[in-house]
Length: 439
Image (cartoon, rainbow, N blue to C red; front, side):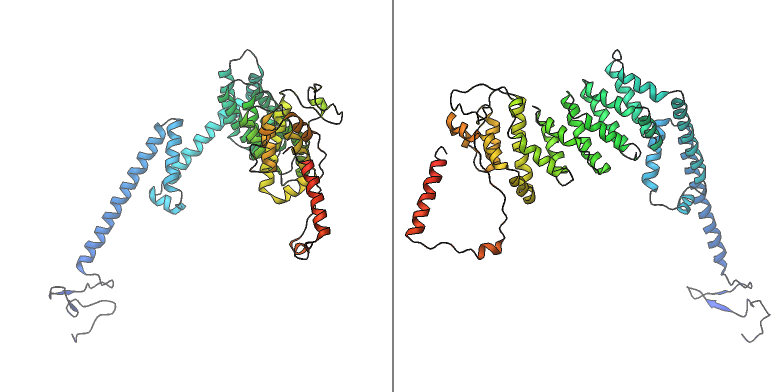
């Protein structure tokens, strides 16, 4: 132990450490000081690392071979799987996973995309979009072929903004909307809806053009096209923001429909627009629909109440469907918002609802108008005779909206009982009984 050590070296006989079983082991004479089995451990670790690298390389080669042998559909599945399993990994982690060969897969991926895009560019350069849009307007082309044209246009829009702009610049919105209105196949119309929805997203340059095209579809003759256009309009309105004034007139007109699914979509859109700049126009239009003009109805001279001031409703016409839908819509939007109810009162909605209750030619108008006036009055219109209905139709009720604050009610003193007060109450009761006797 007392022997001197050479500089930079350890004397093997000078330093002995006890082993785990009591036997001693000498430190290496090298500066590293590794025990004998340390070399074996290091070699074993290098061997294990080599095995892992070989396994990673094997996986990479198998993955690349699978990609090279796959078609477009299979490659899409491979890409989806790759994204699903590696979405949270960093670039160094991907390189480690692929044994520093991730760039090989990236090169294959970009080459595939470049080739696919080249075919699309070549198709568009020879007028592919114009050809597809022209197919939609040909009468002799089968509906199935036109549907395939729509599917191809969907593929074009999925490639990016500039391709959406190319379709819009080719008067595509008008051609697509006209085809949707004329199509007799609901499946095809649903595919057109998907196409129009794609054109309104991520297309700021022409999104207003698509928005106006959807509005133009509202009065078309196809109920399915009306329903789908109203659905897409709710989405487009959020994207565009500004409300086009013409939408009010079209919404009022579509309430004449006999199809409840179309009426539902129209009411839902009205609910969305009620908090926009066209709110007053919508409420004024709905109240006006409760009292149709003489031009909109076929007048027959009644045998009761020949008063020229009384509007006589007769005939089962779409205008009565519109009247009933307006009463229904007013009930829905007024229950959802007190401010809307207050504005409707200022527009004389009570008088017009009573007028609708007098429409004996359309019981649904009577029912919905009465329900809007009072939620629990469900059978009032069933107990009317012709005179009572005519009185309702000729009413001139005017209930202006006057807001009374809660504090004002506290300061309000009720009249004391007395002969003068009793006399006034009797006069008011008699007058009310006289006016409402028919109820």
